[in-house]
Length: 106
Image 1: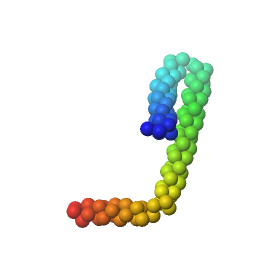
Image 2: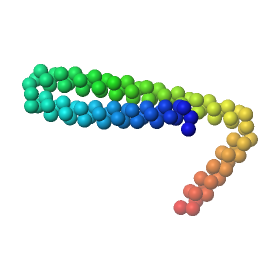
Image 3: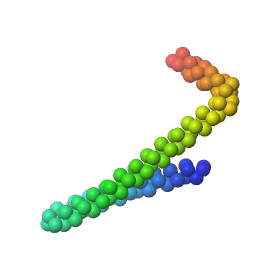
């Protein structure tokens, strides 16, 4: 596994933990706010909004990372096809043949 894949996996795990924590904290804060006054509710709401903002930022970073990885993969594929065009055509033909055989079997 390369560093990018490890980084993406860690980002996803951090995001999942962050979202779970945010939902748990929101449940706790809303339950507490119901028992107390509106001042406590406003503080709970501000804290929830802050956590939501952090989760959105993490999602944006993860999205940008995924886009960057997709672009790098597309460039690498383009380079490989230009370096080995006949092998690429053979692989495409083989994949098409295999898919065609699988479709006609049904």
